Amino acid sequence: MKTHLDWSAYDTYGVGDAYAGIPATGGNYAKAVAVCMNNHQCQRDGKGVMCPSYRITGDPAHSTGARVKAFKAALNGELGEQPFVHPDLAAAMDLCVSCKGCKKECPSAVDMTLIKTEYLAQRNEQLGLSRRARLFGGLPDWLHRYRRPLAVLVGWRNAWPGLARLAEGWLGIAAARPIPLPAARPLAAPVVASSGERGKVILFVDTFTHYYAPEVAVAASAVLAAGGYTVEILRPAADDGEVERPLCCGRTYLSQGMVDAAKREGQRMMAALAPALAEGTPIVGLEPSCLLALRDEFYSLSLGPDVAQLGKQAFLFEEFLMREGNKGLKLKLKPLPGGKAVVHGHCHQKAFGAMKSVRKVLGWIPEFEFDIVDASCCGMSGSFGLEAEHYAASVKMGELALLPAVRAAADDALIVADGFSCRHQIADGSGRQAIHVAVLLQRALA
Image 1 (cartoon, rainbow, N blue to C red):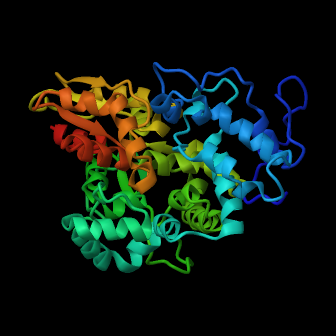
Image 2: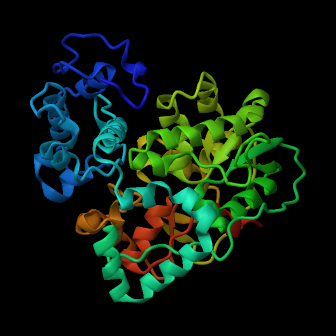
Image 3: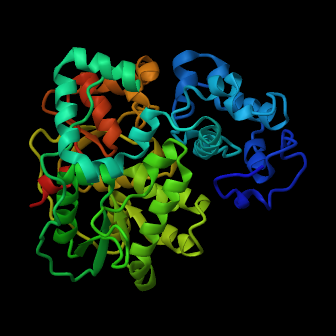
């Protein structure tokens, strides 16, 4: 079987009792599927992320374990000669939101997010890409080339219900869901004064921050500069053929199974990061799913040996601050009006154990009280909550815990969420505007 992703990490996995049966075809991809031990941890409620689709349905058919069984059947030839377009496999994967909860919380660390990417790539190869997949996957390129006309179209679509219904019929984007508007201006490199006494950091500004929330990058730059760091925005390499186009981790392409496009973005990123990797300069990111792609999915994109070094130098904003706090960093912070917040963690932050750094950094603010919502996936999950057939499921996921907690928050309490999609879900489901931790800390700078 020709795979689109690099599954060689599973090559050293042994064959034996540790597996519940490796399928007959699929090579190392089959091994990635077969790590499931059928212990049904994905079919439970309570704390954690895994598995949002099971939690809203109560149906084992929408759990990670059931998806594994479907893939085993596909790779064993039980679904015919074209298993990746078989309705049974599509039904099993329908409500997977790529939250990565299973990679963290499943005792066997089933990486259903990566398995799904390969599935979509195989499916695309046979059926081609839909208009919607091209739109969502290619968002970084669309925004670079057509940001202004896109903003106008989105504004019209959000304002006119009839146009939203037409768009739903043509593209499959839920008419009931407003589409985020790009910022009036994308990020321009912020100029921040800094002593530079604590060295230099490279700030990776992802597609969503660059085009939709540039204030987050400005805030992060201000906080890092206040801490004594010289901040440089990561730019494409000088010999990049698209040097004017902002860098991208490839997350949107991966979410639609567009692996070749994701590889091209990964190659641009690695070329741009080469000097920082050689110098050992820390790389700080703001959007959890984008920064963590550098530490996770990049291993599966055949981007070379430097990916391992990148995994050691790439940090989420709060992770970097916590690390530096352990080395003597002291931010001068003041109490905030109201002095309390409700905090929601992005699924990937939870899956990679990054919420402890959020808790630590927020604890630096004087007289500040905050509650971290014990919630599964917010339900937006990139484009999932925008898809017409998934809108109702997306809302149900948000209503499990997150949206009720936000609505119950005091009027003067801040709502904090690092994930762009999470902030979109919170605004749409509660009317409250959530902010990134970087914005919160900028407000608290003395």
